[in-house]
Length: 110
Length: 114
Image 1 (spheres, each protein chain N blue to C red):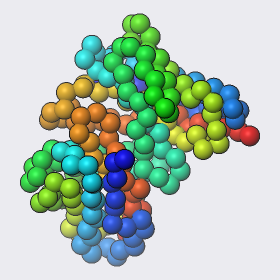
Image 2 (image 1 turned 180 degrees about the vertical axis):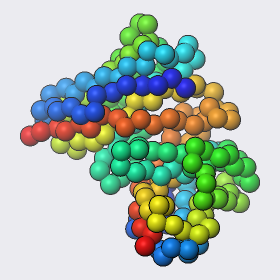
Image 3 (image 1 turned 90 degrees about the vertical axis):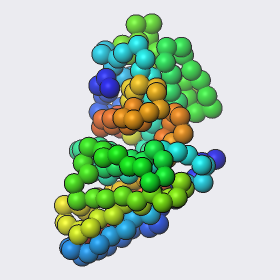
Image 4 (image 1 turned 120 degrees about the vertical axis):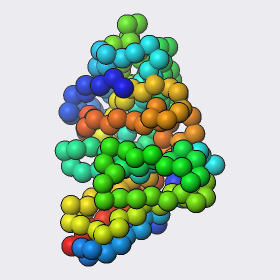
């Protein structure tokens, strides 16, 4: 079975802090994704990566950056966290067809 | 990518078949239909996908109409653990560039009742 793990299930950070969310997949998938999910808005794509060191902006990249130094790991970085970045963050990976998701990180910025 | 329309919520009795509809009237010839579900407080889970033929796996069956403008996900014997939000998405099957992206709607919230 594909396993996608995220570094934390719950995280509380202060406004202005730099935040790192880590995602690791164990199936040698080329593609990895970061989404955020908010009530009434559904899943929105922040960034995705289709190879090591390659990245593409999704629909809402502002305020975020990403890093993919190794194939299995995709990091989401909030350079200076703000309260409007309080959300559920979901990581996914895929090879050809279905995307496989991690359990999510619920981030609260106070 | 084509847009999909799903009912916001549905109910189903435990042990009965759950039939979840999805309209995708603007689907293109090379777009696949994907279904995912999300159980409360978990990440979405891939269920099944298809192009034009009906598909079945251990989780569900996917019925696509001949004109491909709509589809139905069937859970043959729904259990309480099938209570979740079900998402229908259409996407070009090529695994390149922006075709890797999925566009998520709000899905159908299925409640399986005892």
